[in-house]
Length: 216
Image (spheres, rainbow, N blue to C red):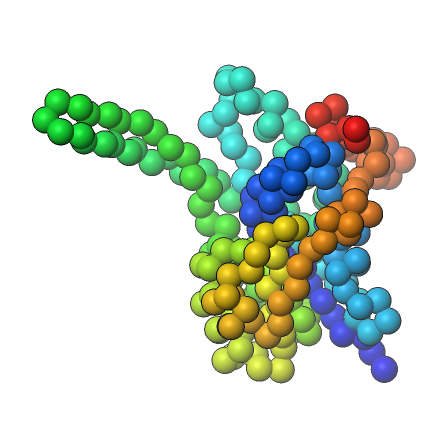
């Protein structure tokens, strides 16, 4: 009997912020393909693909936070070496202002990641149309995913779309209501799925673990 095909779709920043909240930085050096294999039922399911959706914070160049861009690029290189597909989004600049009383005025800029929710939705639906999976696991606690789960249930009732919450992050009840099933990434699974200090592909090192992500 053929095993059920599972595709994993990861909202990169949604997961990153959850891992950051856990505390130890080494948990961010996470092998998503290995994590996916820990999330499935190995006897009855097979992991067929992993897609990672994120964006480089290029607006941080020339600032004290520029190192985060280099760490992110190293992480993407590590993921791609393990067969994870990187779907790149972008940051958009927003002009914000505040007006308090008659005299106080303030203006500032804020960069926000864009396109990730739409990109995940489009990709899941496209893969469903092309019959790439039987079950889609979507790692995101964002309620913007609700239309995707609703569409999957209506258009592809023979396929399942699961909402997977990041470690120690509660599910939104609305996501539970519309998804076929729900699950959670456990911290113990993250600990088991970490990359090593060097990522080798084709006999050469393609990525090294950033010093900031070294285990304590």
